[in-house]
Length: 232
Ligand code: ADP
Ligand code: MG
Image (tube, rainbow, N blue to C red; front, side, top):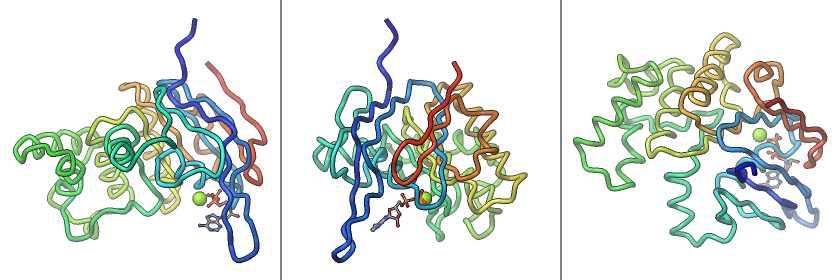
């Protein structure tokens, strides 16, 4: 018998009400993400990619349907469980990096460890090790404005990994980067997937960028799964 998927999505819908108009951002989406897989979610702008990722990350609540991660329904979680889920099960990175401008790279990576109650010396040690893993140990004292876009995204990756999540959710992580740097960042995520078994769900409208790395490509159109293809 094969292992149950890490992520199980069934009949997921998210409708937004804008005045009198209802926008079906996501409609009846079902998919599985196996542990250790690298899944790319592609589709045109407005196809529902960010809506899906925000639901997976526990940042938004579905209108209908269920999400289970490791057998636990995310939509059924109370506030406290959801905070724990976001802190230590599902790490997220975004197009805009979302680093704290006044903090150094090291301090940005330390932040989730502060919230997890890790004491200072251990926090420093772990944050430094994470920056080394993303190849940025020599920039640990730099603030975001003193880093290139690619370097900022590496800091964001290190921060997302701080509490050892099993799942990394990336929403257009290369959207603000040139093509060479985009390849580096996707290569970094692919390396974490390959070497550490980290399960990755990466949203991109640039399918060509993820083709060589992704085990599966899920294409969304108008909030629905239009096509899904994969390899073992
Ligand atoms: P993508 O990330 O693929 O570009 P989104 O998931 O952001 O697409 O959006 C899907 C659809 O839902 C779009 O039509 C968008 O306008 C709509 N939408 C997204 N967020 C909201 C919101 N907060 N309120 C109303 N409509 C929204
Ligand atoms: Mg989007």
